Image 1 (cartoon, rainbow, N blue to C red):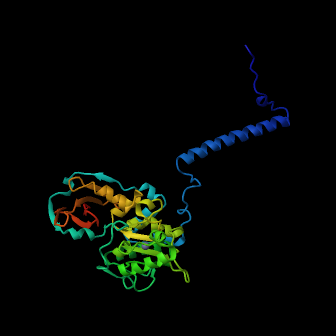
Image 2 (cartoon, protein in one colour):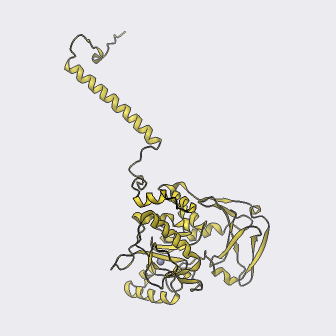
Image 3 (tube, rainbow, N blue to C red):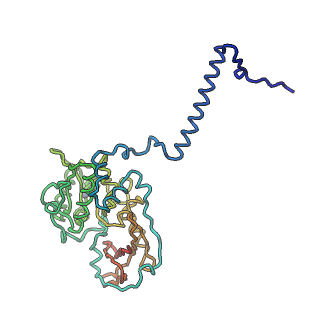
Length: 368
Ligand SMILES: [Zn+2]
């Protein structure tokens, strides 16, 4: 049997001075053990989420003083406080709005309302793109110059929007201002009439040619701006031409949180094939809650959302719980071509009916 020697470094005679070699070996051993212990503790902390990795957003740590003050302010309305909670970094990942299929019994007793075939072209959910033209042309729009809050500016007095969405816009930009104190946001363009679009499109064709023009400017009648539910943001930089707003830096708060005010980024990057447009981080479209939150949380376009909803009639509606916990039921009713359509609606819940602009109606019921 082989005799096993103790390692030399552990043979220490404390009556004699310790030779330098042994001193050095002891120090190295202590150092190695310390490094190992540190590594074990570090990885334990990392796995438990107490240490931020380099790729994580740092906005929470570098919160501007104005934001901190706004969050601590006791004058914040309860609804605003909940929006601020949701706006914190990471909320987009942690808050994904789901669709659940439910039975029609969730709607309770039903009755019906009648709509004409032309009505499919009306409402906040109408789909306007290169395939479906806009039939609205300024029926409910008004200048936002008098109605706007002080948190932003407009290009001129002619900037107009559908009256029903001005409050949502004010509320979103007021909240942005209260957090970051930036007041250089400018609403550059809202409703655009058919005639204005004719001029814009012709200018673009002259400038870049017919084929490329359609990538940037919608042909007359096919611009979402004609709905009155759309606006473009710009920055109020003196002497600048064109759009400076890119939705980055502090402004990313607007692009991330706009769904909580009913808006979506209509032309996101990576969806050019579906929307037909290059990405436009400055172009916002109102569709209302819960649609805006579902579309944004799931990274889909309005076109893709309609593909999902059109599969669900009133006998198998979908249930969407919004960011505040409110439950909504959404379903599709196909229109009777050139006739009257009887749309089933609940007797006991608030609801809204919108045309989809191509084949029917979408009913949004607020269950509460
Ligand atoms: Zn636009």
